[in-house]
Image (cartoon, rainbow over all chains, first blue to last red; front, side, top):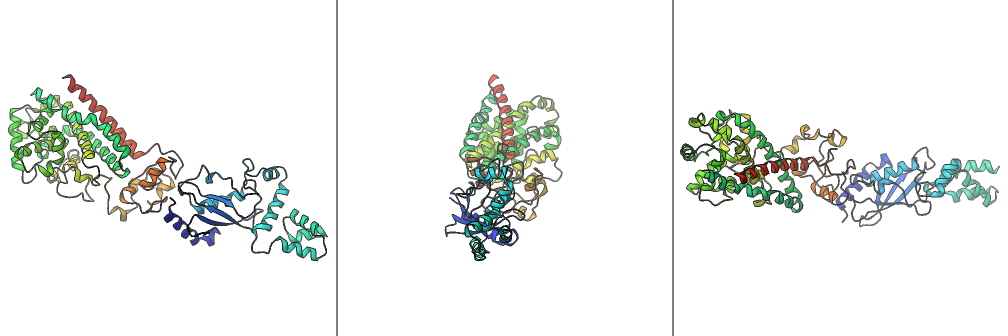
Length: 192
Length: 340
């Protein structure tokens, strides 16, 4: 049986200081089992500027069992599946403690974005890229952030359209945009 | 008389041999709250045992207040005690004889000690037996030597000290066992052990002997918050307001411990009740309510605060250690009895 009193309290406390941390937890359904967490990409990382949504499912035993968390927003990270969004983080598994909360868990996920652990990967392809070609990794991660995690800007399609209107072939535009991590100006420089 | 002592003593000791089993059963099945209260009381009781050793030295001082008559029975209960004393050599075992010689059937040595505060007023035999049982289980066997006879009997009394002490422990443990048995649901330890010594908290009483008083006190009133002997496990209403209480929290030295005791359980967010606030299951100082603690013990078994296994529970381990040593000592005294 989920301790709803606690979940409710967590939601309240989280909304209290969501301005400071940028971390939000909101209800997806009325039953407090399905929640959505939102974390900002850490500053100074390829995820900077992105807003990442995380699906949270509370198990029956919460808070004695860890909440199930999965990235809803696509993200390019060695410890997060680029396919499913599954997160490889110890505190969401065996190192969970009932003293942790949804907010602290989301903070840990945010910290994971800043400090990838390629030795214990969730996504082997990303981890290989991280280890062997860090620059490409950064570009790809930034591109994915631009493409999927920036809800405020209108996304990559806008930029593609803009550059295509300038007279560049769409396929090339897409490739270069991806290579430079979605940065419109960098892409333009490359194209010229 | 010797045969008397032999026949009399096994009664409390028989209760003692059952005691460990009882304890275990209680530990497993009883509610955690009761479990803790018992553990605390036991711990406290064994401290009382230690203190009673110191008490032997202060025979003369104890005489003043050791035969603790209640106000209304003071004269009556003193008299039988004295007359009986003249006929017998003073000795802790014999002392208990008089308990079981009395018509009250026994577990009586045990039960009378417990209940005398409430029911002894009825029967005349109860009067004498309860006065003696109260003084004996009050922890100070030597204290029963009355002033006139104290000098003559001091040598003998010293010889019998060990027997006295063992027997006192037997009584104490039996009392604890009996409490558990009879009052499995009681939430208030002081009510369980009312005896008629309560009026004797004289200001000039020696600390050693006065430490023993609480088990004889409180027959007619509850613990006051400022009672020096008040068991710490008791709910303290003023404690809620007087937090932080530094003495109780300096154990860990970990941030959890330094933060003032939370008013609600960090796990379930329910308010911590008064038992919970005095519950410190882990050395790291992380506090939680007993229900969450129990649940964690059933599943993960690790402290949420430090993730270390919950094996070392200060409260319960201490209690069981004390209990263990108590049982050991009691076993020794039992075997002595069997030999004689």
